[in-house]
Length: 143
Image 1: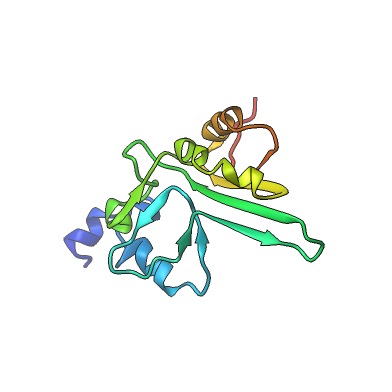
Image 2: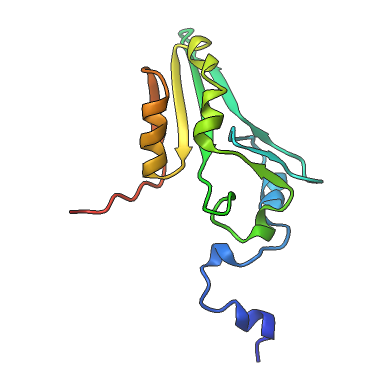
């Protein structure tokens, strides 16, 4: 027989069920750095998050990547709050404006976004020409 806490979680999307240690645990186990400009903090976990990364290709071309994460109505990613405890999240569009200097510091400026279609449109309208958006997990309704 399942416990009361387990049965209370039945029917909830998996992302809404609190995971042991949550997002911070995943970050601490990764052997790479994450790119995301609108998240900070992490408490006791080793924070492997950089807001951006500039790569210089063998031909000398500089490519800048800026990472942005979607926030839900409660100001955190769509997750159980326990999964993102100790992290601070900011508006992706407002945060992106703080990194406009990357356009002048690189030959190519790419925003890696997972912020939803409406926010991607808003970001494209806000940012200057020359920004390339790499839209992740976009679901556009048909019709």
